[in-house]
Image 1 (tube, rainbow, N blue to C red):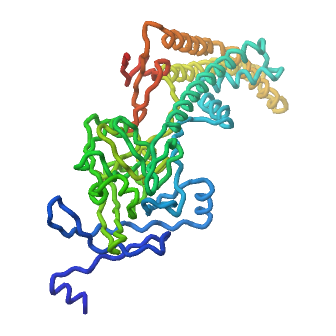
Image 2: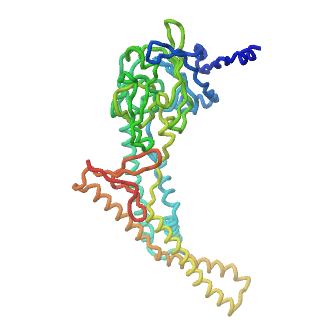
Image 3: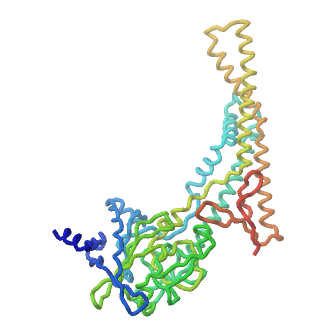
Length: 461
């Protein structure tokens, strides 16, 4: 009856209450709030749209998250200026771009090398020389070239991954200023940032995590952001501080404020955000709720272009937009290497056909002259198979492994010469790894495409 009466009078039902499952003692923040619009008048704002409820995790998943800091894609409730802002542990704010570790380096490199026909063919040829009936030359002449190719490749992969590790280490050790609850500040490293921390960011400083913009140094609450490392756009983006926090008297007042932030589950979409902020008035016992949007956020790996800001960390590590849109480092295979691999398949088909013809013609001739005896048929077939294998091993020199050795030596020499050339100081190569992230490489790592390099440009400092 009450709902029918409200429909007849044109009044809508009040918004449903939303409570944090991990904060059973939290008060009701669903009432409409009052917001200042810059003048002496007050205006009532509509309540925020109720977001999706967070998914429940199993006991085992919760235990794993508590022990290892891994996160489930779930919504989060963050209490401002609390000793424990959240009741759960989320992903660590570490950057890991390496492809290998100590245990996986050798297996992964060998798999990457032997999944191509060229290397796999010469591995089988080298292994065949351990059987006396198939030996046709010195063992070292078959093993040494293949071992050299593998050694050069493994050294190159190890060097590239070591540079990735050093870059990750440098990023994870970047220093940031954390505003402490109740006032004061401390310096922390990027990898020690957690959900619920309030960071003080300055102009030309990288944003280390996905954060909510609370206050800026401008009275209007406006700052500008560079997002070229995130979406490739060079235009500066405008961002706005949360009005309820920007209108506070000072940064110290913000450090003493009591508020709760709701943030939707992590998403790959860098152009959408759903959440709200509830500011508690301890003096009057009320609460004011403000909806949050994309213009109130700063995504990880963007750069603050102007001013200074106080921001609340909402997503860290693998939960950030940039991490969710970044693929693992791919294995670099030059187009020239693929062409050599294709030519090796063609030559193998020709040698196999030639060897088959040289074995089949005498076998058929003997059968036509003397006939086939069932008692000797099995032995003759085995002898023909052995002859076929020997002929293929003799013809293996037609597929030149020396070509692969020469290519690897040329790449190594050219890399050393270009990176050590004193006439090209500070030369860098920039290439687009994927549609969402740009990385800087040394000149020794361009991707060969159709005999040249593409997708890069040079910059002299």
